[in-house]
Image (cartoon, rainbow, N blue to C red):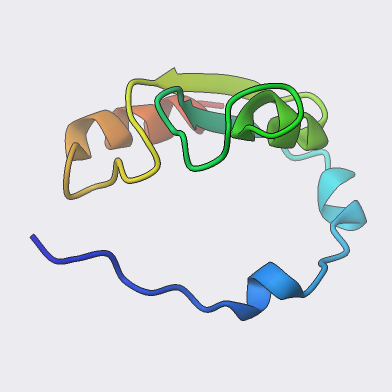
Length: 88
């Protein structure tokens, strides 16, 4: 298995104007792996509900995994969760 691939840093430092994105009538889903501790859990910090609430109304898809759960470590589970997220 290959190591983790580096990510570009620029998106972390440039603020994006996502008002148009959040106002789209497109159905939204949020895939949340509840063992993800990349950010502290809880109201003020964690991925969900802190970041997910920005989507407005969305379908919450929950899975057993963490920040590094991906197509190399658990491909069938990730595929199932993506299928659930896009089932409309």
